[in-house]
Length: 127
Image 1 (spheres, helix red, strand yellow):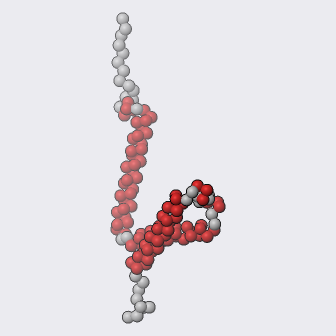
Image 2 (spheres, one colour):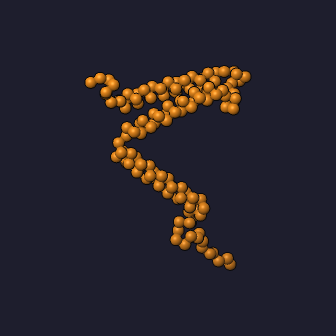
Image 3 (spheres, helix red, strand yellow):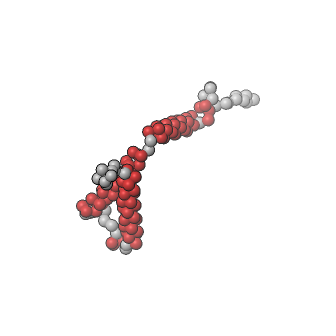
C-alpha cells in the first residue's frame, strides 16, 4: 500500500500540534524572561503600540492551542464525555448549594435555620 492511499493518522497530527504548541509556549516563556530582564526604559510598550506582526504571531499561537484542545476533545470517547459532563453538572450543583447555604447564613444568621426564625429570648422579670 502506498503512503498516498494510507489514512491520516490522528495521533501523528496530535503529536505535531503538541510540538507546535510546546515551541510556541517556549517562545512565549523566552519573551517573558527577556521582558523581565529588560531595564524599565526598554520594557514592552502597551498592546496599543504593538506591531501587527507580533499580534499575528500571538493569534497563530492561540489558534495552535485551540486546535490542540479540539484534537484532544475528538479523541475522547462519547461515554467518557458524558461521564465528565455529568460530574461537572454535579459539581456545579454542589457549588450552587454551598453558595445558597452561605447566603442564608449571611442574611439571617444561625437563627434563620430554626423553624420559629427568631432568637431564643427569655423574658426576665425585673423587680
